[in-house]
Amino acid sequence: MNYEEFYAALSPLTKTVKGACSAADKNGKKTVADAENGNLADLAKAMDDLEKNIAAQQSALAALREAFDSFDNQAYFVEGDFEKQMLEACQALGVDVKTLDAGNYEMFPYSVKVNAERQEITVSRKKVSTARPSWFAKYIHDNLEKLNRASFNEESFAKELAEAYQTALAVSGKPEGTAIPLVTIYKYLAPTARARKEYDMLSFSFDVARLYNRHYTQLKDGSSLILGPGKKGKPIRILDANGREQLLVTLAIFRENLG
Image (tube, rainbow, N blue to C red):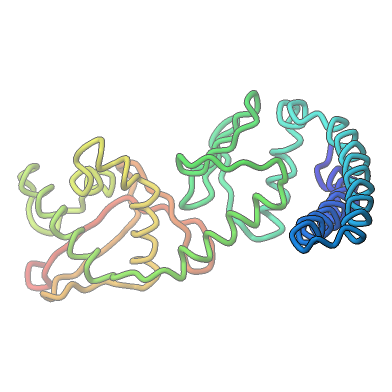
């Protein structure tokens, strides 16, 4: 099954419905005006035209309904056609997709869940109602464009990272300059379940990505900030300025004279 083929069949039918509705609306308004004006001769004609419009609407709607009923939306999702075409549409628009498991995807920094049984799509906890893969891919693409254009205060975010880093050092008793896992830093930035709901790990990763891509390495007080890979600790996945995957594990902040 292919939605674009289905849409090609629907499109001329929806245009016919639209035209019939437009004509009915026009004659409906004329009927009201003629009645108000007392123009009975024109009112009779307007009612005749409106009757024809309504018949045309019913005929157009019946044809549209027949085409609509021919598409098995549940099978389209359950058999995997929607997801396959969704991935193809995302690739065509350059949307990075990481498949996590059945029905779960990361379209950085969005989490996407496709519930095939219920024909539901959830994007970072927001339901998106569509069965058209190309529309969905464009929806993600356009929202990513907006996110990337949004203002970002790297100095303010770096300061928040530094404060969380200092808290992590104090709790662990480790010396200044120690590399701390970014997942630990996140826990101090969002210490409660409510905070993590409003600012999830993917949102944090996106902010880290923006800091990384702006090559922000020095805090206002002169301290150096290093985002780096590592062999120990759970990495966070980001996309660099060229759209390539980078795995970052730790954050270290130190003054040069500390060595």
